[in-house]
Image (cartoon, rainbow, N blue to C red; front, side, top):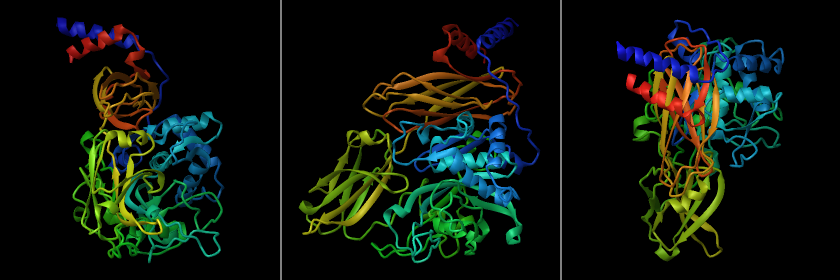
Length: 554
């Protein structure tokens, strides 16, 4: 009995010491499993190439509800006629009014796309700015935001990733609109993205005389729709069963989605068929933490692939994510990496095999690429060798811009032109932020740990957290020494959230690297009047001691 009394006292003193913030009303949850997952679920997991992002959709947030109202005011009456036109209008207003896309690595006057871990903070900034675009987003941020706004509008939605996503940039002969074709493609390197992320909305299609099914909708600004050349970007809703059935309708950019997943043609270098849409994935339904595992997606490739381009997902790639297999091989020399998927901070080896070219003539080129395949800059040439030992110091100056490096092997001809033999893209993978969570009376204490993978200190360290009560915090942290271990504790409060399983997304960013991600899982089984996020480094030593004592009580 004495131990129970002691713990009760410690709990009361600790909770009394924590700062309160505003209460938030939680969205009502229905008994439908489909509705629970695709309308009411705040928690997401988005695949972005070599890593995955945990996301808080914040569907029940007052900020999201107000954003839905404001965005509806930016639509015409015709766009608000039904769910089909409304979902298409959302893709337009997001990229026209809410979020500014940027892919060149220059984010000094805004927030890097990799720092976001939830939708509410983006929408809050937008509302507070009086309608100015929030800086910055990339495809997964546009898609996550669209999924949030669809769900908040009572339209079931989910976020999907397409690996090896084709992007058709061809123009009509007069140059006024974009062709949406996918046959007889003449592939260029930058036309094949490592991945692309969009949303799906569950819609009935009376305009197509079709029952409800998933429809692809994409808020990322890419090319103007041929239905509205020269007007703001918009895409979808493209009826996914029509994609799989190769129904080539021009309406709502069906041909564009066909090209992204089913582009057919011959690589001009190899003469081999293109490999497009090797995996299309989304999160498996359910709230169990085991479903939020990087190598455990729901593979929905078969929903999109027409029979003549369908490939067995297991034979397509022995591992997930799939290895890049772009249209870059000419024959002759081959270029390889050991290991094939190195991690940030790890050295790796590039080797050249096959071919009868003398060593003196061989040139290995190293350059930085975006996930869309576009060059971000040449790094260096390695000449006269079939082996390059790539050390951390070779790529460290560039991992704050991208983690995709392209190595190519070839020779220079007498005119000085580079003749390509083979190319390989390597995406450096990040370790996850480890998060251990403990709940005491609806206050969740999370211990974050991360080891700096670099041989230099990580400076300008920022931790971003999206709490279960829709609160959001971006907190500066001390530098992490070279190869040093970062440890800190964050407390978040449940507010009105009463979910038995809650996910708290976390990202850790620095001047030297892109963000690393993680999440804490706990329960908000009891109602609390408090909400907010507190970093233990910013509160009293007494609270640290009280949390330590609470740990003994568990």
